[in-house]
Image 1 (cartoon, one colour):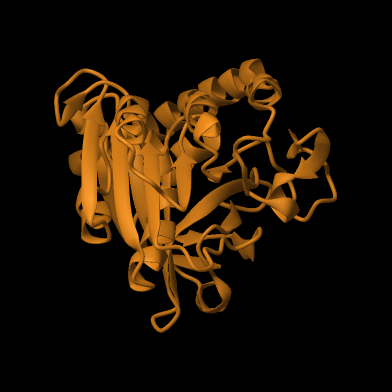
Image 2 (cartoon, one colour):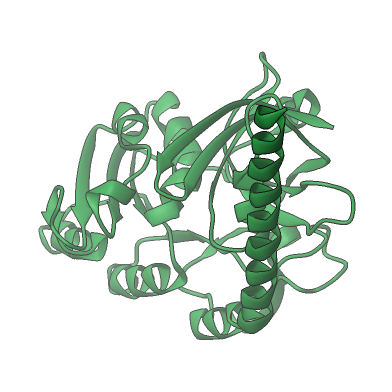
Length: 292
């Protein structure tokens, strides 16, 4: 069992948990992830390690309540426990001899971008960052990204904060202005990583993306997380999740991510119904106790 030490709401439906997991924290590196299970019989879901502290034995995860399991996870509070917390999994990222890197995070992708930029900053690399969200309300970890960046740009789709428009607009401007980068990291929705990689390709700048395919076991045995990279089948859990964005078949990835949409919808509806029943019973029980 793994204890939740801290819970924060970063934005509507986006939560941050600090988990007590000393063995995971001891081995964790930027780019890796964990697979957790809330309770016995529950669904296993992968979540990127957003931060870690090997001395304190803690691992930070950030998630958005979009499906049944993440909504159930969001009902837990500090002091509660998670059944399974397996990791670190995946291949750590490395940036040998880099002097200047551009990091781009869209939406929830800002969370897995942070540990990579933090490591680069600690290595003395010049870090330029672009982060964005649909609205200012949904922008997360702004101060954390700013603290590890030499220069930071903020974008919102509706113009409620920073630049009005997508992060790819600023990316295009920087490249057209002649800025040089040893590498560009793009993390966010698949369509963002696809478009961003298409923009950087003509400039010949190495572009790293972090993929989020459907995943079950996290050890390469189930094949659920297969993606096509440079015409070859790769497994995000053991070969990634970081890959060369210029070689990823994003159209295939986007199509496969939609495979279980209907089943996810049904599962979420059932969870919400059961959760509402629990709340009603709790309220009715409290009212009866009050009468007594």
